[in-house]
Image 1 (cartoon, rainbow, N blue to C red):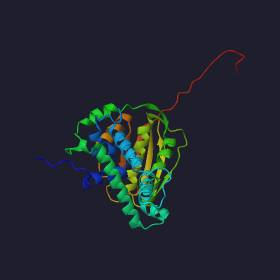
Image 2: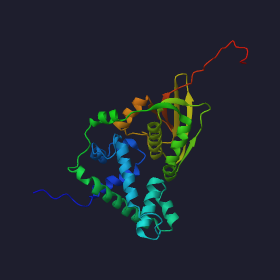
Image 3: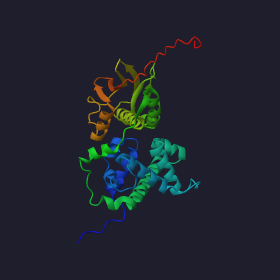
Image 4: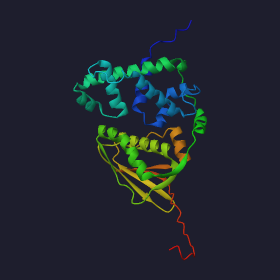
Length: 294
């Protein structure tokens, strides 16, 4: 006789939720998270991609963990909820969270751990049955997942999009002692791409570079030729083989669909080149012989 399905989440499941919280902006990671397979075909999030479903459910669980509006911050539930939001949603380092709340870093860590366990319990109660038996997502749903994602190509200013995306990695950079410097392009760096996917791609790329860098400057600047444009990110790798891990297949296929290329030029500093197409608006010359116009 098989064991009954456990009411409470296992330590492994809680750890999976912690890792999902740590990677809320990394859609390549979330796409391959076990929750993505559990949510497939569940009808909980319509036709969204796997990573969108995982992120949505995590955010709903965080909201469910909240003790409600205007709770006394001295209550343990309110304090752990506040730390959860500061650390994972606002990406504030744990030491800064402790300083803001006026408590020790050890107590802050305990409160965060308690919040992670609560979020895991909420998700387990809702989705745990779908995870039995636990098994990794099959390899070839990759194609069907990609088919679900409809890329909405539009003209996007990559300089403005990078400035927007960079705000999402400010806390991560501070935690690793990295200062991100961005030189805005001297031209409108326009390209045809999916704005949301491109934004998430930039966040993922910069997050990886920050985590594989020595403390110091990470410098981004734009270059262009007749047909292509490129974002060059100069960084100081923490080891001789920067960015050793290959990109997740799902992430790489999305980049391929957007016709982006990522190249790493080794050195100290090393350079990560993100190459994308130029989309220069056509110049329309209007000629009219009407003397009244002019």
